[in-house]
Amino acid sequence: MQTKLTKLLGIRHPIIQGGMAWIADASLASAVSNAGGLGIISAMNANADWVREEIRKCRTLTDKPFGVNIMLMSPHVEEVAQMVAEEKVPVVTTGAGNPSRFVKMWKEAGIKILPVVASTALAKMVERAGADAVIAEGGESGGHVGDLTTMALVPQVVDAVKIPVVAAGGIGDGRGLVAAFALGACGVQMGTRFLVADECTVSAEYKKKVLAAKDISTMVTGRRLGHPVRAIKNTYMNAYAKMEADSNIPDEQLEQFGVGSLRKAAKEGNADEGCFLAGQIAGMVKRAQPAREIIDEIMAQAEKMMEGVRWDV
Amino acid sequence: MQTKLTKLLGIRHPIIQGGMAWIADASLASAVSNAGGLGIISAMNANADWVREEIRKCRTLTDKPFGVNIMLMSPHVEEVAQMVAEEKVPVVTTGAGNPSRFVKMWKEAGIKILPVVASTALAKMVERAGADAVIAEGGESGGHVGDLTTMALVPQVVDAVKIPVVAAGGIGDGRGLVAAFALGACGVQMGTRFLVADECTVSAEYKKKVLAAKDISTMVTGRRLGHPVRAIKNTYMNAYAKMEADSNIPDEQLEQFGVGSLRKAAKEGNADEGCFLAGQIAGMVKRAQPAREIIDEIMAQAEKMMEGVRWDV
Image (cartoon, rainbow over all chains, first blue to last red):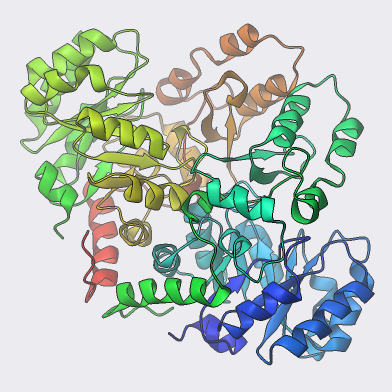
């Protein structure tokens, strides 16, 4: 299935793997790229040396295109931005802002740039700055979330920009991929379903929680500090929500409480103190599978639905 | 276009108009039904006499099927439930709970029952109780909202029940209708787009606000009291949000603050003190049109996209 996204990135299937902090490393990224999607390494808050090592590891594991997700609020963002240009990674996705100051450097390095956006205003801004496509992410996704949902955001972004639009948030199977096409997107980004990929190095407890999740198993906290995140309900999330609702607890204390919780979930598998980021479609994720099987299953379902369809995706 | 929904309800187009309190009256409902959709009269918190009068008025305006939306938390719910059975209205949709105690009476009156649900658990419960279909509504909708979004909720409800599923929330055009089909729904319920229908008797200020809305123009308040509602950002909503975040303000004061705000928006057009319920696709609603034109436009767009498609919707 060829779409504007597969043509833009030179990939086989219109599926990008989300850049999940503490999770999306060379192992998962290379598996997704080898399966015909676009694997992504998360640069999260890491320094350039760590990210460079993952990039080089990824290159030993795949000869297919892959990308790096750069969190624009990272304290190491300048050195990481420079490094990915030196390494000439095929694709960069960005989160938490407008990457315009890096666009020239990345373009000169031949990098395709796909910022994640949560509003039409940011989509228009990054299009003007030179982005090759945008990833319109709805608030049903895991991790940092915006207010708009995929169903409402994607068609509005499609109407607002001329560059290709990728849908993210709430997509876990072939039905979601076809729905994204219907809304005007040319591909999807998925995180949650890849959490249980065999090649995903996240803790066993994390995978267990995703596989056990129901539709209502996630919640959002962090709105008060302006950085809402969606994660699976547990002791940590409930405690955070309770503190957040108490306006007598100062912001600093709340901020402090969250420190280390992602690492505790992803690396240590600390069931109670970890923050297990996941999207609302966790309830649809029922089986651990190799990344290739996940992608093949989604594509088979979508291709069957798309038989006879003549949309320009 | 025939779907499980058009066959179940005996309507021409798979579009149900949302049952908006203070807004969805005989005028709008009959216009939507005459245009081939399913018009809905909102029983809101009104008594049986008021609702009966709207039903009879609707019958003078259309000979097509229409429905009544019954809010299960209404103080008048028992008498309204009884009255719709006496009146043998063709369809009842329900909100805010499980209508199981009325199912037998309504079935005997030949009424089709479509509860609005926000989770797979409630969907399964109402299916067991005898519902004919469910309306799975995502939190991008206007008015009372659940946590799950349309993109995440609809396929999970489709997998959880055997009865037909209608998608609601975030749907404003033909693309949304086709996306709903892709997710496994057999029709949609739309509220926001019908707010600006010529036959909608809501205040001029309300229509103005919807037409001026952008993608990010709505917000949710009321989570603290367990009844979150989505509405257009204005003086009222900002003030409510501020009070809600202050845990030194007692719940009673918050509750009191909201009283009358829907009426002020819908009937008085009070720009600052009204609560202008609307969904996230308000940003996509750009023109006031007759209900028939809205429906025809959506169907033409969807039918063009569905050419050659062989989905079982």
